[in-house]
Length: 263
Image (cartoon, rainbow, N blue to C red; front, side, top):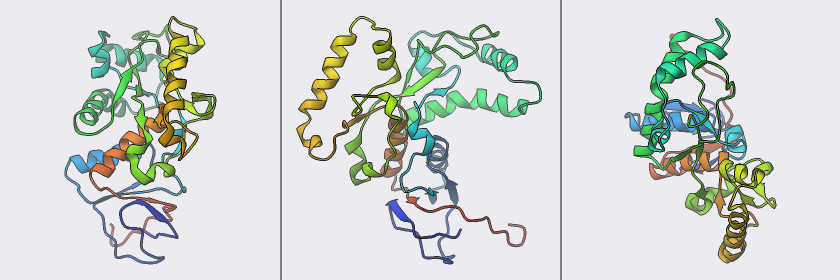
């Protein structure tokens, strides 16, 4: 790996250009949901020397900017709130909505089998927590095997200060998921606001009051300490990396892969 003038979000910084003396068991390129989940899972499965590199100056990528939702049929969060689902229904749904020959059937099957295991592993071993979105239906609602909710999950809100000084390096969620441009809201809360469901005024007042009374955090930034959606999901993953002293290097693009003697 060739590193440029990067800096570390945690741990020691990268070596100088053309330095080849830093060896790792696993190198993960990119700091979105996929990259950080892969890094944590590798660590939990025994690869203790794992490095994540990110080309940007802040971590999280499009995952942090997004709503943070993931689609995992038969997840344990849905079961806990009474959602009835099966791998057979999920398989029928994907068979109906994915064009023929557009995806490897073995990969689809691996996704269906391993998705619930991945969510369970993160819940058992890390700080990553999700909520089941009962009001978020499958996109193709009339397709065989579709469900009216429960398969989509969103990250539990997270407190920025739990990242220590690295909170400034996290990309924020898209402005559309902020109230008054400063207070993060979840997808469930956005649904409550947009549908003017019972309690939406009380929810608005509570979020605004929590924001106004958090004087210590107001001295540091105008953005609320409580973050939601994509940035909350990435923050939970990264906080789990900090718990394990796993390094993440910023401004460190992958320049090229070097092959030597077939390796």
